[in-house]
Length: 466
Image 1 (cartoon, rainbow, N blue to C red):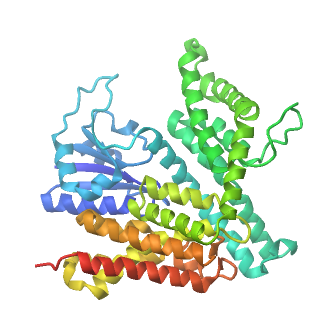
Image 2: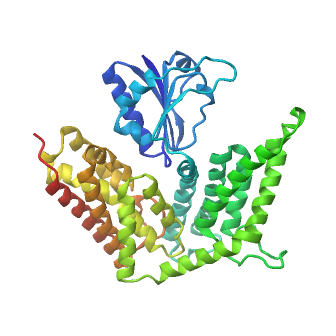
Image 3: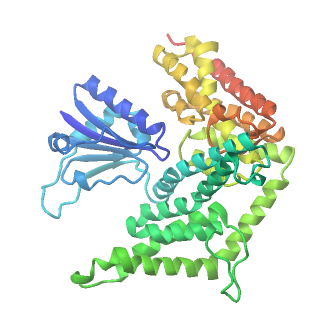
């Protein structure tokens, strides 16, 4: 039998390609042919052709982001979360082949068999995050390069390469809230939602409004990620509501997506934010940041412990992403202790598993796991927590608690030792850049300690392979 598949995870880095590989290996073992299109961070690769789609007996969509499925109309289909393809790809293939397409009439909708598909709030949020991450990473790393070349006061060196890189990075980094909000709205309402979403995110970032025309304007400042999330969802559902309410003659329907919907939705999101939501959201964000800045000692350690547990709990899933998005929102000039705790905790699970499977307890892992453990070294050092997923899927009751324990230790130590991070990604590869990490020695201690804790626990709780 012939199948085609599309895989896509929120970050487009690890899950996307792990799911593709799992499907390819399962299909080969079962004697089927499969073409897997990956929609990752570098765009669509191995794209399914019209001929391949025509010849396919079934379609598998393993995605946690929006995938355009208009080309698959009339095909038998299974649509699941990307993690389901990694965990049980053979069952997924069998279900896809068992699905029966409906008669191919002009108004036929795609027959879809769903299992544990992440929908609603989760899917919309992950779509926004997946589009936001390249801006966060590029902006943060450019800021770090500016610091490396021009020192901590690079912004006082106009006309230099370092200052140009620094300000470019600041500009790119400032786009993350509009992009997050815009693509949440896009996930909800498709292209008509983008304009209102971007405007809402820009208002949340404080980028496009001064308050000078209102008698009682919202307080100056940014409502941050909370504001961007709320305006993104609000914009998307406003557009959906307008589409249901406004009915135009056939001859004027072409005006809806390009004029009527953008005009009304942008006006509504602007007025709602400025007159209703802006002031309370800015107050909440300001209070939260003040509370975080006031954390020290034991309180900081508790926060680091909680963030560490979140990063290791589902290794790239919604809990992990919630902690990551929270961390990126706290990055300021000079670095963020929250972001430092988040990254070190995210590096720990694959590194701990790599240490256990390749050094401390080889007999407790299969040959395939020991090989995967070698790759986990590189994935952990690159801050790709998803490198731990194959091990957690095979033995969740032992691996996940061990991962959480190690990440909790790493996060708590990072906070207690006063470590700060000025970039949102990059793993160990950015630590050598000057001014990126505050207290580099303490940060390395936190990373090593968390890695060793995970590895030792795994070495104790796992049983020898017979």
